Image (cartoon, rainbow, N blue to C red; front, top):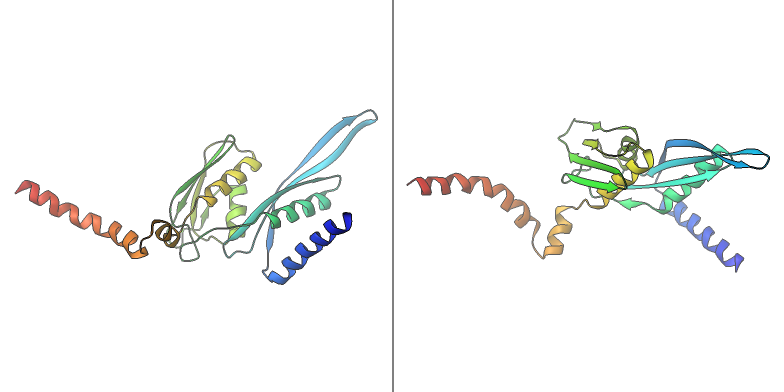
Length: 197
């Protein structure tokens, strides 16, 4: 039984090597936690790490161990296993504004024009840098706990959708979705003129 589980783990490692994607990881926070036992206190370290390939894939993970490097390694492994793909507009920003929540954490992410850069707080900035987004405006409205902020950001990112995916879900063409939005303001003045006449 144990042999089978070890083989499964080795397979996962092989898959990571075969994928060939250069993953970068960022340490968001390290927290020292103490467990009080009969002989005194036992210290451990909890790490929160964000991992991404800067091409639209990102994941986060938390790890706890008696030593800092081991906690970071555990968190990085968990982050690699929980990666998600986020659709990006022109490879630099989000397609649309989106909100995310986790516990008391609440965030708002907004797409931005070229040259804006990453306007976001510490934990959220780490997510966007590893994801590869270059232009975004983000605001944290709730809890400032790094774990809640990162999880709320991931909740928002999972709600992001590209025009292509929305069009396929509705059984329409992408041009129908985007074309109607651009044509709507042009028809409004014409309707007002008819109402006046």
